[in-house]
Image (cartoon, rainbow, N blue to C red; front, side, top):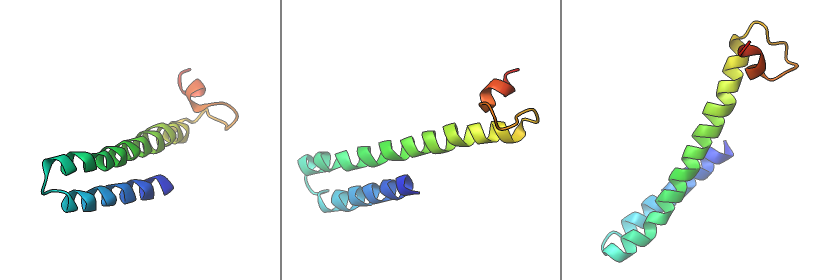
Length: 78
């Protein structure tokens, strides 16, 4: 939740700065760094939180042979 909150704050800052500096092209380009940082943090949260951790949990949940002692990937590939 901290990563999602950080993403939201960074993208909110990006939006506010973008609205404030949208009159000149040079300032607009300078404020885009906030958008890139917020987007990268959001993608990192999605990839790690949902794809890696969630995928591993889902594999363990569906595997009837997994007993909680070894990694789920080991028992699911057998």
